[in-house]
Structures are given as C-alpha cells and as structure tokens.
Image 1: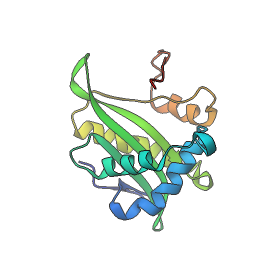
Image 2: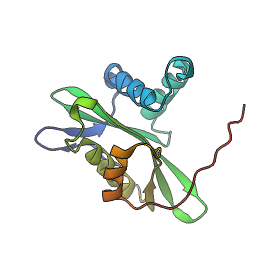
Image 3: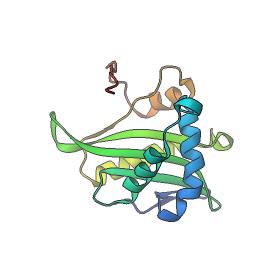
Length: 159
C-alpha cells in the first residue's frame, strides 16, 4: 500500500499517530468550510473515533496527509467498501482539504492522485466523491481529473 509520494516541496503519506495535533486543525477547517462548526460542530467523540479508525489496520478508512517542511498542509480521507455492481472494492473519497495558504499549488490534485494510487494498489474498480454544488474552486479541479456521474444525492437523517 502507499508509503509516500514526494516531490520537491510536498510529501503525501499516510497519517501517523504523531500527526494528530496537526491533523486536527485541518479537520476542523474542513468541517467549518461545510458549516459544521459552533452549534453544528461534530462532537469530540466523532472526531476521536474517526481518528482512531484511520490508525486501525482492520478499518477500511484511510487518511493521507500532505506535508511541507514538516507541517501538515492538507488531508484526504477515503473509505473502501463493497458494491453491488462490482466484485472489486470501490473507494469513496470522503474528505479533501488544504490550508488556504497553499491552495493553487496542486496539493489537492496530488492528494486525489494518491487516493487513485491507493485504490489501484487495493484492486479497486473506481474512486468517487461528492462536493457541494457551490464549491466552485474544487469543481474546476474535479472537472479536469474525473467525470461527473450525473447522479443527484438524496439523504434522510435518522435520529
């Protein structure tokens, strides 16, 4: 499985236990971007459980981080799951976030490409993800490196 991808400035690698203190502000930034802050913030239990799942080899959840000069500047979370339309696993790219200061440097693309590599190494049939229709900056990248499925997402919270 992916160990790391490096270029002259950025390393993309799996998260390690010692990354938590730098991962957490990125995670909080991602959640704030999607309006999950203040009264709608995720609980500490959700955050801690999510982090522990990334570090558990028995879990199908993964976290890759982008590092520059010893500092984490981005993250991507993915989940491998079964599907009814393929024997191979499918990879869901659930979360992607980079610090505002490094946007436009290709880090988001590198993180996505690292998930593509992980999926390929796992024998996955495809990688897919969702983004909000108002996320125009991300959509410009996604339109260049993937194809739109045409599907509309419906959901119903179960309380």
